[in-house]
Length: 180
Image 1 (cartoon, rainbow, N blue to C red):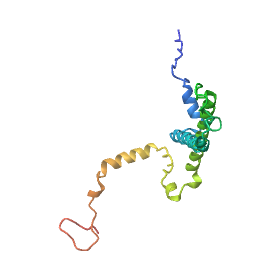
Image 2: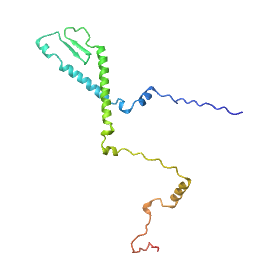
Image 3: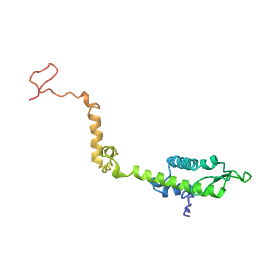
Image 4: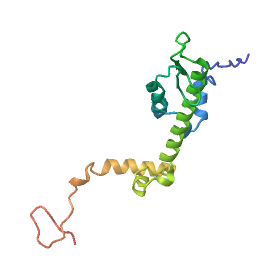
């Protein structure tokens, strides 16, 4: 009775995590790097500097207490009011929208710098020459070539520096003989 073929169950075949699939689906230039966080922090600090510059110093100097200080651009996520101290200064809607917008701008800045830095047109000739070159595959060797190589390895001395080459000058040393 012929044996039945058993199907082999490959437990890991075709099973990839969502992270691996997404990582392979985007080109290298479009993947966020560590610079994205730096850009995000710089953008956030710029927003705070803008809020500090727009601070109503003149109104406070004249004694006007009905002043509202907004932090956040384009939508304020912090709103300080001198007359209404009981309300929370944090605006959740503005914070969420602004953070998403800041992160998107940071991502675009990172992608733009990656595209500029990894542009092959901007690489100098010296840097281009440093890249490894592709080698051609060796041709399949015949049995005769393999046998010749084995015989040559056995008969030739292993170190080519130890080879004694006959001298070309006419003076003979006692250890050398010139064949004619």
